[in-house]
Amino acid sequence: MEDALEIKDVEEIVEAILIRLPPGEPENFVRASLVCKLWCRLLSDNGFLGRYRAFHNIPPMLGLLHSWFCNDPFIPITKFIPRGHPKHNNVADCRHGRVLFSDWVIWFPMTGNTRELPAPQRGDNWNTDECAAVLCAVDGCDHGACQSGPFFVVSISLDEEKVATAIVYSSETSTWSAPTSLDLGFIESDISLSWMPGVLSGGALHFILMHDARLGVLKYDLGTSCLSEIEPTFEIQSARYDSHALIAPEDGQLGIARLNGFNLSVYWREVCHDQVAMWKKSEVIDLKKHLLASDPMISHTELVGSVERTAIIFATSNIGTYMIDLKSLRPKKLTSELRLFNHPWALFPYFSFYNPPVGQVENVADLGESEMGSIDEESGESESRSSDRESGESDAGSSEGEMRKLMLEAPMMKQKKPKLETSSTKHRP
Image (cartoon, rainbow, N blue to C red):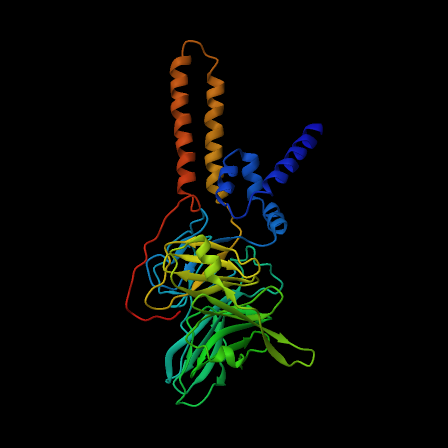
């Protein structure tokens, strides 16, 4: 009885240590799993993983995906490397642990699994102009590790008659919904959907819409399945040729970031008590002062995305891509692999708590313990001690080699820099 209590106390102490492993450093999970079977068992326990997610609350950003067409769209910013590298078209969206490609394939980087979706049926007037989004279908989910759950894919297309049509795919029914349409204007109008990522805010998806010489926002309400157009202020509308990105903080607000050279302006949409919406402009931020302080070689910048539920935007330059928190105005260089190209591309953050491959780790841990046990049992024999010890050292070395091999081959332990391929072909997510 006392031994059982002592083991329980040890497990509680170990769990108190393991639960504080930084979620943004997934390599620590593999190293901790290789310590012993107790640690490996604790790290594989679903109850512990749930408490770990609750303790840290927000999943870490493990990497970035970009819509620039190349062999590997994933750019690691931690030591996590996804399982599987599907060779599909450019990335259309990434949210809640899932990646959507423009050829209607869902990729789960944590497991390496993929799922091919049936292509949505389009009308005869479809002009290939579209945008899409993937999201978790579970109400109230914290999206810390919901990759295996049901999901939705929302596709919005634009036909030659300037009619926007939205349809929704459900992973539970494996079917597309009935279409919802919105007439956006005259046939003669120059209307197009932006390549920039959409954002999820207030139960609705929002996408940047180019409408003649002005900028607008196309909204799809997930609750009512309705499309509508939001008109920004004239100042934003007339700045079509500037760089823009939608922002969706945690409080459900919707914002538009506008970058002209190094001058960054942010406009927030506020709904008054009488349900009348208005746009409020924040003060202009001089990014040159903040970016050049860290990298004097920067000569030009453009916005390429944002992080939902935060006030963080992504800006790319001639020497790399940066993450900028609009609250602290502190830039952080994410990668030098992604830079300004001749035509537009977008950036998508990948957030998830890491689940270690404990099945593989446990097998290696068992192998290591059995080999070490055999060494201890055989060490008492005098005459054959030398030969047995040599054999034991050889086996232990093999076990150590297996551990080292596992640590090196585990997806998050590799460090790889993908090479981007340039192309003159215009693309859209």
